[in-house]
Length: 231
Image (cartoon, rainbow, N blue to C red; front, side):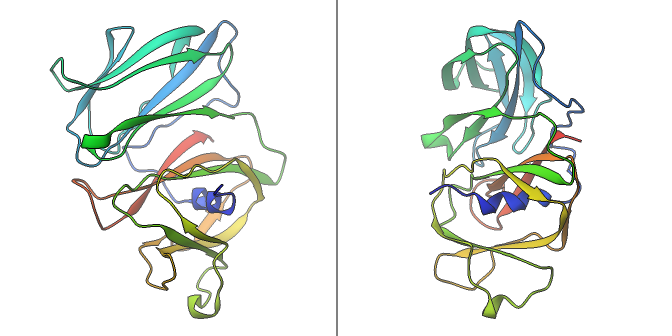
């Protein structure tokens, strides 16, 4: 199921130091692509990221995300190794298109870790809107229901905008009006909140990616990792 309205999660709040910070308003330059890497495997160790067998990022901790790295377009090999070792946990070949941005997420628990390769749209949204995208990236979380309401609305009288959303589901981008929202996520069929965004303000011109994640080591409490794509 596509998580279209779940992308309102990206209205989120201030980024933590672990989030990437990109100030560009478009995609990569001609003849090049841009790639960022996100460590979202909760029980994996710190890692090194190698591009074409050269170390591009070192000692990346859980929930850290790189800035965009510029690479020539065409084929590349991306490896994720346990930091300081030659033990490879992800080995992926990627074909990068000219002028395109990508996000590579190391996802899932370590014994089933896998790369999720996303194509990013960092062009400027229409005036008065933001472009948002979300991913259910918490491997220990069950299928969930998603409620999107006005801030402090009574959840007991609300209906979910999405039901029974499974781990690994990825949203299409959605352009939404700037404004104030609250997003609450519950186990499917329940009103018990496992992620609560609080009151959120989504500003015009923003592009955001949010990933629902486990706590370090795996399991609850669950949270959101919000990446600042543009603005």
